[in-house]
Length: 315
Image (cartoon, rainbow, N blue to C red; front, top):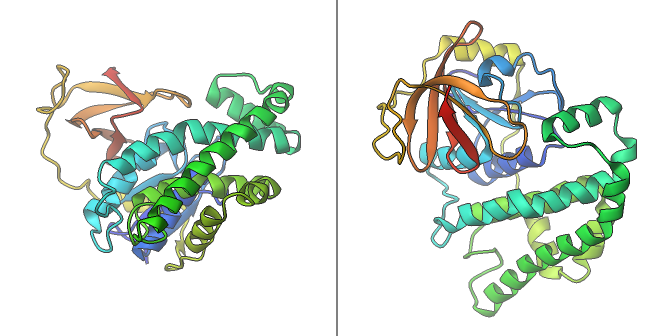
């Protein structure tokens, strides 16, 4: 039964960033609770927890709410240390790899997928993603760009093949870094998975020249873990209301700006879905920002954001 100590993931099945978290859960053999959320707005049970942050997924542990996989994964490692994904050779490097997989490679994935299946998407989804990105949904332009993006996407997949080949020649195993799967593998897995869900023939064609990567990918897909407990958004809200955020000393000592704890601030992503979330600053440092929110529905919450990829200002 889910409670204040449970890992709760608010997600939907076809979300690639949600699959990144689901793979991490499987590799760490963690039990978790699943809240299925809509892929588009409105998200009535999620918004009270996030203060308006709308990207998927969202991780909840009691009254602590984690926004963006860039802060969720380090938090999993901090709270649940064994088995570790931040293995020797992955430290720091995994975050650099994530900046690539979540950025340039992911954008190529999106372009390829939308060009292939965009004319099958419901208008409500198109309208939602148009508002979220701030750009017009130009299907013809996407189709025109698709051949170039497919070239770019395959080239980036071949970087994995080169890495795996180098690892085999050095006799250090069949994972991207070292003899066990770790955080770098979690980040790199997301884009092949996302493409396979939508344009599997394209991924199969790419794998024709990347057999080591195909083998690596299939082995990660085969990793098993505990079956999640399905719960409703209402239950997740009840858990947040009954809990208190994990105690954190208020500090901005490591911040390069002149913020102090208690400042009324706002934070949002710097690329898309720029919905500002307001609250009182608790922590600001080089890794994360934590703000306290007092919501009439969810009551007292701490919202955690990564520092990279987000804009922080006074509200």
